Image 1: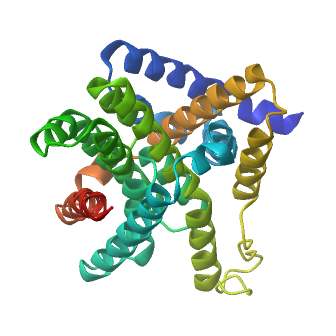
Image 2 (image 1 turned 45 degrees about the vertical axis):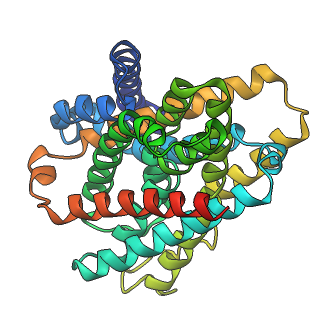
Length: 331
């Protein structure tokens, strides 16, 4: 009970900020994660003072992982199978190469390998949700939270721009509705922006875009496994010299839970009400976690990142768009 009394003020605070962010996002049609981040940063002082600090830390870690696990309720095996082998292969190739290019560019620009995996994964998979999931699987580092925040800001901004520009691009390239849907689903970062851009073209394009996007979301599991494997490699069993530090697991519990929920959701045994509730809970937990991470960050830390991280994410986004267009042309 003592632990509960320590964390509940901060958890309630993050929940209130999450509700406010979701209301603003719905009203203005802007990325919810970005609102959660900005509102959280405005309350930064609460993470170091008063009774809310422990709950903010709990939300940024435990509720974040629970939200990632519940993402499994968005996907079924039949949805992936319905795509056919060609779109699945395109998604596999584009996600793998985008992450690989991100990691190579990050090293060339003088960043750690993990930053390339974080930004590349966010661009290649599902935007802010992927950034939070990958960050949760990565080893502790003094700059990890700042890198996560920057990635969320960058990927949310780029995703919104892509939602506005890519439908016009598909018209300019003369793409058929299904082909345009594949391109939208294969290149825009966040799920909400994919849905918005796809159905702005046509119902057929929206359906195709959503299915391809869900396939990209399914790639979250192997990429989390990659992040966990790299974390184990960079943190030896002795804890890297830190007394009592445990070696990270081969696969984090929330990644295992994600896979189990995908399989359960695929059986059709779960009632629709349960699936919808889980999906809503996942979104709420992730938004609350983003607010908590914002509360733990100073604005000057974001401003000080310089131009190189911006260039990295723009290059990753352009690479993904060109690569997926090329794969569609070859199809």
